[in-house]
Image (cartoon, rainbow, N blue to C red; front, top):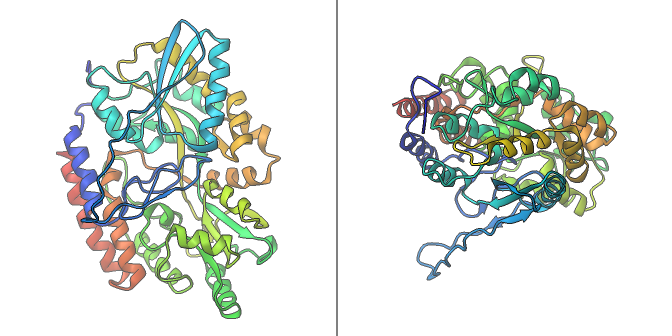
Length: 458
């Protein structure tokens, strides 16, 4: 695989073991761009890319007598007719896939390039096998939380000496996106769009002026609304055991899940404060709350506020809800904004790329204001490019999500985050159900996470 970029690369087998440990711990594994787990107990929520619809796929119960069908090999979509050929592996879906395919096709036709776009369902696993064997793509289109693990095992290449150094990124992209592309002080991707959860509210149930400005107000208003409206809820989201959707509170309280060097923060005083706030939230929402329950309550007009991301807008509009989007309130205990995870879609240059020059040209177009403004307008997404943000800021939905991403924290791109999803999710479930007090649940989770981190370090 050539020279190593770090003193010691993390073995692939250790990364796989860490992922399995997280899943076996009972919590959700790392989120996809829309914050939904790649694999979970029945039903499974298929990865939701920006603009894609959430799809629940039931898994047959054991002994049901169902014979699984063979999964067909993915069929590439080929655009352009040029002599230069670039292969892109991705997991795009829905209207997002339609828009990006058209735009890349137009660019390819104008630049003497043929681009092969291949939808790869199990993208992380496939690139980890194919790239070392010399059978990978030129470009991997994925999300920033995949950068660390793929950099460590040399599946992707750093871009600093290929025209995409930090100075270039800082000149063209918002700071959150630049940080999301940075791992071990090097640049590993070109950012395109950013996702963060925010408050989507029903204007017929709560006006913009009445929205809570702090977490204390959120609890107070929720109790009053719930009491006055039996069968309805002021505020819902998939809170029960979801580290992704609970991140705004943890990071808003000044806590963190894990740092780049593997330092675990689940049992800090700030983390325990966040856990205590989560316990408060459990008193104002249904006890059995997940994505589907929250979506149903909101789209049926039975919830005033739904904390979710831009991927939910299509469902909200289809239901005819008169909605608005607003930032998550300030954390009362710290006076700081709640800080949701910001997932950043990006293109990464695969190690061993066969047509590196053309691939880098495509990546530059992908990062351009022209491309990102069109993607944003078509899919209500937040562009990472500064000029593109200026071009679409008149759209109130996009503008609200832009405001929210500005106060967010990039999804951790360290491989050690794989050690946190399971323990953090288990702790949050124990807090939500009352099985353990916040301090004990988080101390137990921190110990499990530290053990998993040590296994990753080898």
